[in-house]
Image 1 (cartoon, rainbow, N blue to C red):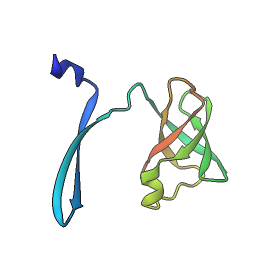
Image 2 (image 1 turned 90 degrees about the vertical axis):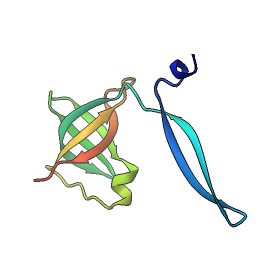
Image 3 (image 1 turned 180 degrees about the vertical axis):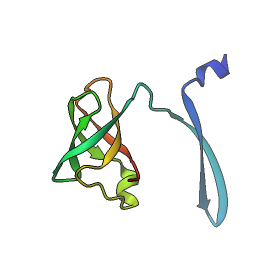
Length: 102
């Protein structure tokens, strides 16, 4: 019964220091599911790291860059091939998760 309740969860480990001693803490995080991944091309750059992307099937989506791409300063320019994750609730908004090497 316990293992079936863990379905869809991922085990994470956190190393912290408390009172000068190293403490390992484990917790479960719900995995992000039901995301739609599509390929596309950047057609317009907007303020605040937002972009318009023409998806492979012709639709245009408004997307932003993921936090890891911002943190690692990965530049995204017009015409770049990108992989976009779209929410199943709104298929016209999403985030850029990968920039293809050209």
